[in-house]
Image (cartoon, rainbow, N blue to C red; front, side, top):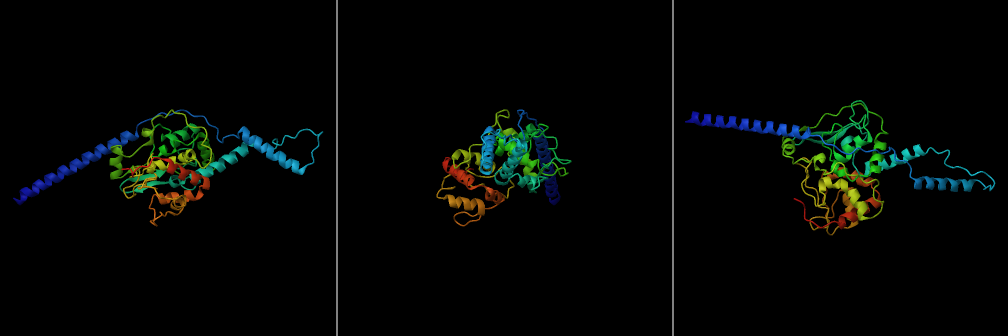
Length: 346
């Protein structure tokens, strides 16, 4: 009798192993198939850096003429002075673009969290259950995937989640879909100013949970989720100011965790240890009763109005909130107060 029971247990164990092996084989094949898809996006031509606009050029001319008038007594018979003749407008445009790009990277788009402070590579996710996804080297050094990138290639990977070979990237590019052409150009101008560093980033690997989520399409890929890869992007960001429109533009990068409607909930791309993203709508589950000052404290110090400490991964974003201007924080708050009140997303 005992031998019969042991034989049954052994048979069941073998069947279980075969079933697990079959599921693993199917899941691995499904992941490989999904990551082998190819996508096409529009071809884009953008100057890097963005040239000075006529308005900027005339403002510079007026500034230099004013300074000249303060230093020199006007001579009505003298030939008009071309105050811009000695100015390298291309170099000035690059300088301003890099300044804007630096702010975008340090205060809004959190690029260094995945790609490192020197953009030579970093970590997106390192978790036994989900897998290891490393941010590639963006410096253009040996082994960098962006070494021969055109601006279209940058557009495809940043705003569409499509690698240069047409296959989908793990990068959450849906967060950057609303990035304007000038912002993309500014970021490229800034990143490409870093010294080239040699180094090849290993391809993503998936743990057991990551494999199943990827195989069942529960793990989002931006290349799949973006409906129209040929749609025109906005040329310029909204005018900077304490407006819901500007705040909505800033909040685009929040939607990957907090969802498009800001109602929060489980984070699709995060490890199981990550808590649900907070509800950022003016609902009792979210920001109802909060003041702007409390919102800033939460963003910069990681503390809720009740004294509770905000957990990771939001803690990773606090250095960026420190770099945001007062107007940017105000606009973000204004936008959260303008969206529909909804309960915590599930």
